[in-house]
Amino acid sequence: MNIRFRYWHHVSSVAAAMTILSAAVPAQAGLIFFDLRDTAAIEPVDEGSFITLTRGGITATLTAMVDGNSGVLNVTGSGFGVNADGGTDDTDTIDDKEGLESIEVTFDTAVTIDEVHLSLLTAAQNDQATLTIAGFPGLALADTGTSADIFTISADNELPAGQKMILAFSSGNGFSFDGFSVSTPVPEPTSAVLAALGVVSLLGCRRKCRQCRNTRCCVEHCS
Picture (cartoon, one colour):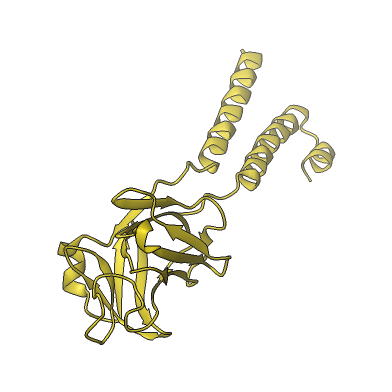
């Protein structure tokens, strides 16, 4: 009976440690989409130099810039962009009619930029945007041949809290910034695995110490 008890005690201890191991390695975080064409949500807060949006527990701040100075964000049924003072400016796109326009985006926590959604890009007009993430080399975004251009960002896309993602006009007639998807970075599992293995080792050590009941043994094996 004593041997059976010790066996099941050991099995349950290892099972508990493996449960800790499973819990310590996080699952892949899902995408969180910020819809900038949602007029019901955006229109009440636009017409200012910046807006703050919270989705899925992540807060993003978008700031309009024109030639390095503050602009005005604006959404309509046709697009989302920067409204620069001037009669020729297209108020719901990012263009260069009254100065080089861009939108800067920062977050309250570290994120991974997974997708950028644009529209109104036209190959015939050589429309092009430049996306810069945390100072990495800029990415050129051009017409994909569909009405909604969705760009998947798979490299150099980690953005620490407070640093900027910048979407800027590059060439052509302008474009609409329709939205973006982010996720929270998943920690490397190495440290979690090592911690869980340490728990397994500690449980095994304690079992040995209970069997031998020798203080010197415990010091040698558990220190």
